[in-house]
Image 1 (cartoon, rainbow over the protein chains, first blue to last red):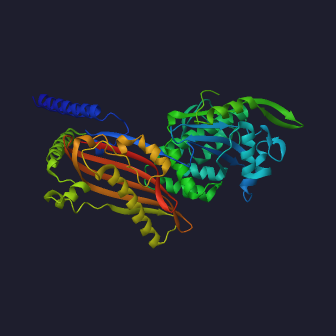
Image 2 (cartoon, one colour; image 1 turned 120 degrees about the vertical axis):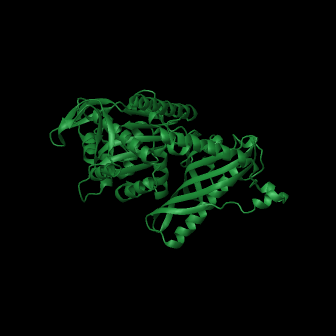
Image 3 (tube, each protein chain N blue to C red; image 1 turned 90 degrees about the vertical axis):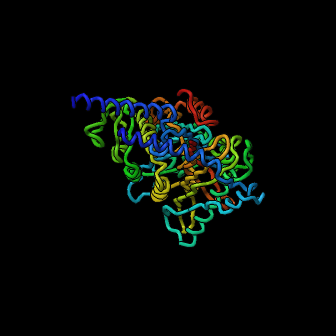
Length: 306
Length: 195
């Protein structure tokens, strides 16, 4: 008898709970609401930023291989991603360029694109990227790998989707497994730098850098509402990154990044063929593809296909 | 959610709904009513003031400048609230100048989100609004002893009387930088709900 009463009470409670949840589900249609604040209240969200005069902002992100004590703005640029953010639509795109791409560097003739930073600084790298893609970046941000590791650690690590298992005998002996993996600062650096273990070499590495960017973005977006998160991030960037952006501009860019819709991120890597210039192994980039990507992404920071 | 708490939530919601209904008798805080100098207006002559506090300063900023930023940003938020929700004549459906203190580009962006960033959806069905909660907490980014950027976390609650009587909560963040010598809103992340 006691068991029956107990079961009946449990059933009544379960029905009551189910009813409340059902009502809540009907009246609160969006998953992003805060349940403790808004039970049975219809909530709608809006977000938007307007940075400068144009809808799309272009940032050239450069990972410098500068050694300790070396000026990172005049070393080789090993990771090269041209990132566009559309503050009107919330879309974003990244065009990756293999570091060995043989390109025209303003005032320095033809060289590997990674040497543009060494020869001509951030402006020269921006010029080389403009020559290749037709897009002149609004900002150039140069960082070195140790800071990159610290930055990823500071935001609590990132999660990336790795399409294949790969390893490197020096940077990651045990390798990265396939699938969704969480990376701390060191592993994010290794994931972005390893080339030899990848079938597609430099092209696959550039694609991995874009997976890392997606992971960083997802983390920033999820934390952006925490009081002080963006401000702390901007302070860290100012301490460790060389950029032509002012503190206020960095803040505006950070808010713009936080509002990018992850479903509206598109990425491509400029393809090419491996060859030699003298004894040096280089990539002869598919300039026509690079120009097409530039034309397609310039107005709205969105790529339809690579 | 435990069943007892679920029941509590329902009871709370019913209680709030009841409160919302009685709020029809709450006097208007709109300037138009004040100008009529009637009895109701006198009750609204001491509107709820906004409480603005500094959550944290990131970087160095002298105390006097902290206070100045707090006051200036508080005024920017107040001007938006007054233009978009609390001020003006009700009922109305038009909110033409709802974004004072926004950059020109942000105004264009905000106009497409008017349903949330103003009281436009309920405005035609409301006789008056009365603020019941106005708080702003700011995070300041400072370099070279100058404030460069501010995130204003805010909560605004107001009661409406009329056909659509109820309580509306607007909360979220405004992003501000200094343009042409004044703090201006260049972006926002806002949620609005009514019951």
